[in-house]
Image 1 (cartoon, helix red, strand yellow):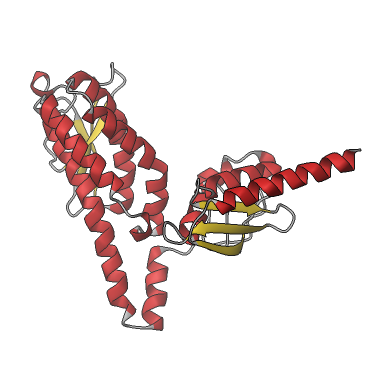
Image 2 (spheres, helix red, strand yellow):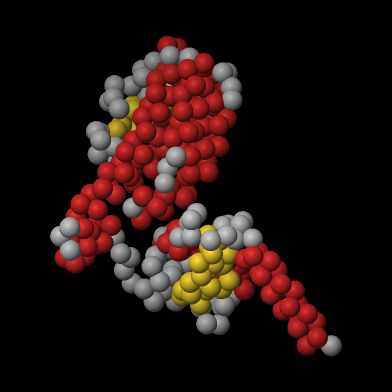
Length: 288
């Protein structure tokens, strides 16, 4: 009886996977190795890599092999494997961040066979050794990364300036522009280290930008700006900016809990209080 139930469950699962795969257009299928241990790992890996009507991941805990089916016009295996690495699982191309791996459930902490992650600089060196003409391609990708994130950062600084002036109308308008620039970021043009941070902060950046854009109430905008600044800090630390950026802190903001923001100027101009306490705060870090 149990064997019949197991067989029926297997058939139901197969039909479910087949139906989900059928919804994906321009399909391309690859088989890759992803490290993990158990059923919980299987759930996490497949959830991290799969996207509705775009990508489907089917991982086998015994063989450690995954079948990845995706819409080749909308994504690629690298993007899928980066998401899985960000969820804590090493694979053929990318290593999971150490802190994410360390936070996996005990039964999910597989033996890490890979010892070193391939860094952006190492990739550039290999490309240059293979073919000097690839130098132009690498430089182009770096420039694309800087340019698209620069627009995001510039909109953030304009938002900060609007809040310094307590101008809710301008803050709302700039946030709409920032939301557009966030949506325009092409993940496949980001280097691995920046991509990992981007995947971590992207959702919150868009959420807070949207909240600020939908109101002209400066108090509400400043509340969302606290979280926005925290996530923007992580992104700009990884991607850098064309000039030094000053990470500043006001101990009075956020109901006395304190709050940070980013500025292109070392001189403090407080976006949480404006003219009420313009110089309240200090620079706690310079990002170069």
